[in-house]
Length: 209
Image (cartoon, rainbow, N blue to C red; front, side, top):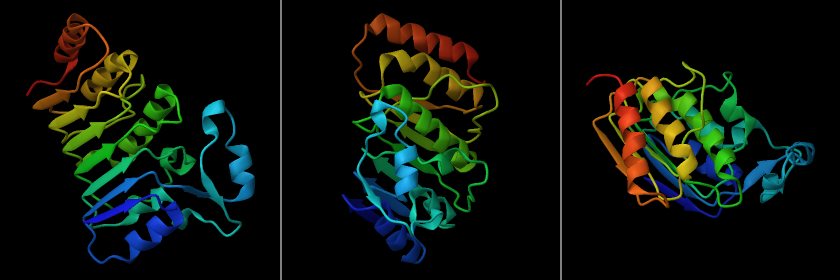
């Protein structure tokens, strides 16, 4: 088990790739590593001002998506970290790991919608072997077939998930074919009746157990 707090993603990936038979890694407040031109191009919204180390020599092997290349990795947790690397959204990302558990926390300096989009990208890359997911930002509305979660039997949504994203999160889990057996929702700033209504809609569209 590897736990890292407040380091650059270049250091994180270097350490993780060097650990033999690494099965679990937990990351919190990781700083991005980018080339200067990439950092400048990333500022497309007010939410894109994030901490980064600028280095002309930075390559894809120095970034967080490289963690998906660790074949022994089974549990990945990332909290309060900017996950806007476009490689996460690319079908060209090499995925050798068979992740069973994925925990994603919201990034405090990004909008709920942006965080949810990033979560969807990581789920799309890691979904086939996942059995449990924990989401701090939910999942945005997605076209049918974008996510495939055929083995997810339990999911957890933290209180940082925007109430506006609960419907799309539940709908995405159902459309992804998740054979859900347990769904945990922390306290939300919304009426209990609204939560019940959303869960009812989810149960109507979820695959039969």
